[in-house]
Length: 314
Image (cartoon, rainbow, N blue to C red):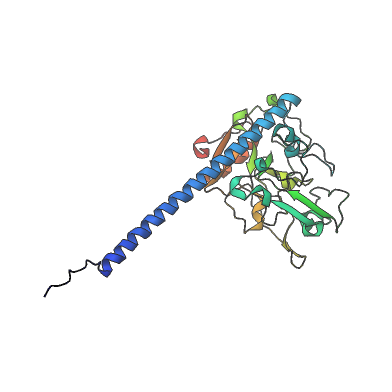
């Protein structure tokens, strides 16, 4: 009587070993894929900033000075991002138009970064008064446009890049290159064009209340390198139209942040791992790690002859 041939089979321990190896390989693959994506978004962000730098230098070539962060202190002030629109092929864009060049690819799609609704959804800006400063006093950050009321419907597109106006706060002292009503010439930057940062990264807030590229509010389009000024912050419930005030601690330096923490809008950071991209006055872009946070205020001044630890920066 003939016997059926024995079929080969794997022991349970062999199956488990194969599964473990596949899991390890999958983990390595996903990790490598994530690194590739992070690297790709960082490079794309650098390319955006280089184009911004090129536009700023074109503005300088025509006007003989760098664009001011705002061209007046009026509520209808043009922002630096609005002033360079002709040089990025978006001349005539409206405040609600999303501009891909103004958004870091790591910060979500530009089309999704548009705030829309009644101004009551942005009370941090439109309510009377302003943020508490570190000394406990109160001062207006910027007046709201006169046509806005509590029932006004508004629409603003966001940006990921803000001008560095000061080595300290968003309200000064203005020792940077671009600040309200500035007319800074290249010859005014005695610290050196390649030694002076003019634009840094800061993702728009998760609720899109902060980060409008055409906003009349300084906190949307500017920041101090060692900012301790506290923007008015609230948490917003769009479902019930209710708001809750949020007291933020002073976060003075460039450092990591998350979209889950609303107060991170008050300092420079990015969604790139370990650091962020910075635009220099000569149009170059460098990725600077968070460990160099104390060097950023020194890099932000136009004429202070600060000693910079370049080994820490790069």
